[in-house]
Image (cartoon, rainbow, N blue to C red; front, side):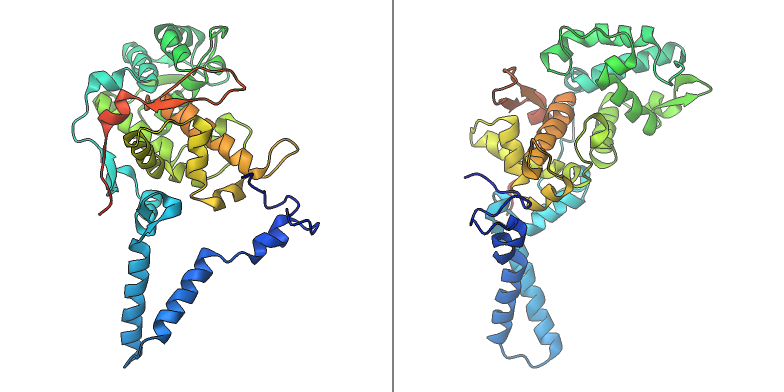
Amino acid sequence: MTKVSRNEPCPCGSGKKYKKCCLADMPSPASEVTEQLAAAIAAQDFASLEEMQEFLDQQVMEHNDQQRDEFHGLSSEHVHHMLMLPLDEQELIGWQPELDEQTITQTPVMQITLHLLALLHEAPLKATAKGNLPAAAVKFIYAQAAEQFIDAGLSYNHNVVSKEDDFSSLNVVRLLLTDLGIIKFQKKHFSLTQRGKKLSIVQIYQTLFDYYTLSYNWAYEDGYNESRFLPQTTSYALWQLAQLQQQNKKFTTKGFAQHIIDSFPMAVEDFIDDKYQTPYERTINAYSLRMLHRFWNLFGLITIEKTSMLEPTPFIPSELFNHVFWIKQPK
């Protein structure tokens, strides 16, 4: 079934926009819940307002604890926690207590990070006039990890890397490390901070992950609209990926993006339509690009298969994905 954008003509043939016609007539989940609560209250006899409030609180709690179809086995309460809490405070997903540094070292994000930190450990690097890393450092770091980045689809064989702008992943990692105070830019030089010297490989990886999720501007590298909501779905999406893996289901990057976005229709409101794509299509494409092709791919959590630009792009969770997170089922 083809999804209809809010601003497209209504399929009923009225000539009105969908949001002004049949969409407006659809009962919202909130109104349905309100009606259910009102009916439950009407069926009771209360001795006081306090007793009624206690009954109402219990009804709301029971409703929020119910598994919802749109959340694929999770309750509203579980999803609320996944959207609002950082990874280390989650109930159903979190970091494994012991992580293997050697495995984490092999991820694209840490390959860049460790080579850059090694250079800075030797001596500060003089920035370019634009404030970027010097060309020699960029070429060195790319040479160490070029094959891995090409295999991951984060770079291409025909790429000529001679400056930081040619190596977008390095540019992003350098910005993250600077914002986190692991490296610093001062007096036209990049240098390693005391914090950068003290953090372990695992701590750096987790710190970069948390910052990418909570603070990084995901719209920095593309022309899609900025959306603060998409990064909030990270824990929810990781949990859903683990469920699909357990069910031995195959999926593509856009198919998985649709699986997540269909749980949160309001996410589409952050994206405007153009003459080529509806807001829904732009949301799916932005999510696939930002969450999967960039974020999870850069952090080594998934392996994306190489396909034609016109074909769906299959992907699978990497070995690292199963190594770094613990996953629980809701009770």
